[in-house]
Image 1 (cartoon, helix red, strand yellow):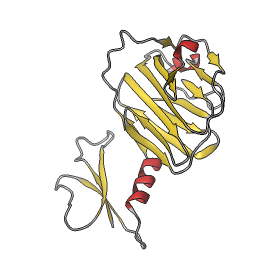
Image 2 (cartoon, rainbow, N blue to C red):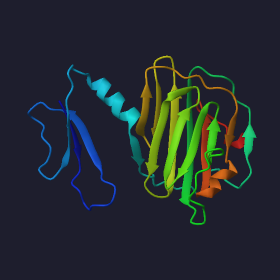
Image 3 (cartoon, one colour):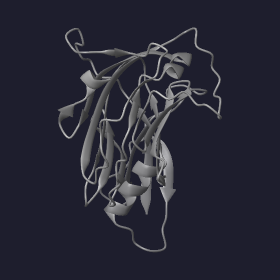
Length: 219
């Protein structure tokens, strides 16, 4: 039996905050003010299976970081696509991209499915703006890799995608949003600062690294 616990309800009609999931063992108990669900399984499941299911099937909420960006190099989302093909197909890689997003009040709150706003694509990893502070990130070669998340306010966000022979992982501001035991190849080409992002955001890119090598000066 699992306990899925939510923080106490602050107000009805707004989004509620999820707290934790854990196995019922008679020792750890939810607080009297919390609420949630009991989830029962016929067969025993491992902690790893629980973690995998919740990381890969939930919409996550991400808090912005407080970072001094005054001395960092920057690429503005200026309405012009900036493209390069300086990377090669990689089996093992670590991608880091740091962006700042600020709500664009003049943006139209519409999502055009035939041409979605795309802050960037790096090889086969695609990052889409869905509007209303919601985003999705996925590897187009693997439907299972889809990650949905929502950001809580404007600010600085560092996205890390890493893959090797043992695992693939996505973190945003050091919060793990996706995990798989399988590697996912990185195909060549990338596109940053796509102008369609301006539908919802004023944005800047401060860092773009692959395997520790900065490529921001090539864009």
